Length: 142
Image (tube, rainbow, N blue to C red; front, top):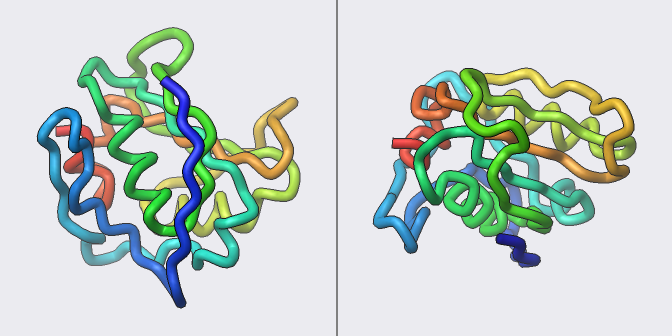
């Protein structure tokens, strides 16, 4: 499934996953202690976010994409991760997206890695089986 959505958010935004996964009944709480603020809408609005589901649970990528779209990200593709389920979640980015990728990774308690041959101004978030333990995205993966 692929969708394009743009949302505007005023000021500094925190990723709040309330209302996630309308198609699968999931909902989520806001950030947990120890996580940082998400990138601001002005930072995130000129970077494309691709969300991929690397779990066996349906609706995870869509839930995460919807929550991040509400925070000002322009959502590119939502899909199942190539190669199927994976143990660990990851964030990769193309040129021009490093600061947003690093801010998102910091917010989620993760590390962002530059993608070799990655698409410019694009951040890819692949939710792995550990996503259920990643603070703000946990409810999407449960």
